[in-house]
Image 1: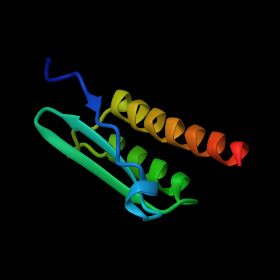
Image 2: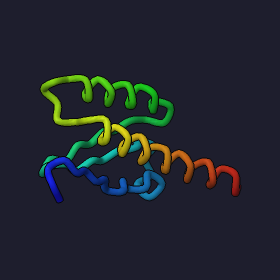
Image 3: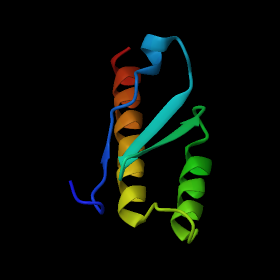
Image 4: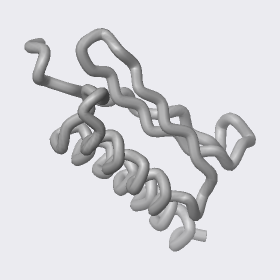
Length: 86
C-alpha cells in the first residue's frame, strides 16, 4: 500500500456492545484515526473531518473524508434497514 492510499476497518457493531456510540475508523500511513460519536451527531463529525482536511497540520485529505463519510453512510443504511424490518 502506498502512502497515499487509505482503507477503513469496519467498526464494531454498537448493538453487540450494548452501547449507542458510533465509531468511524481510518487507517492511513501507519496511523489509526478514530472518530467516536452519538447517534444524531453525524453532521458535527463530518464538519470536524472537513476542518481536518483543511488543516495544513493534518494528514487527512478529501479521499480520506470520502472514505469516512461512506463508512458512516453504510452504517446508517444498515440501521435504517433494521428499523424497517421490525
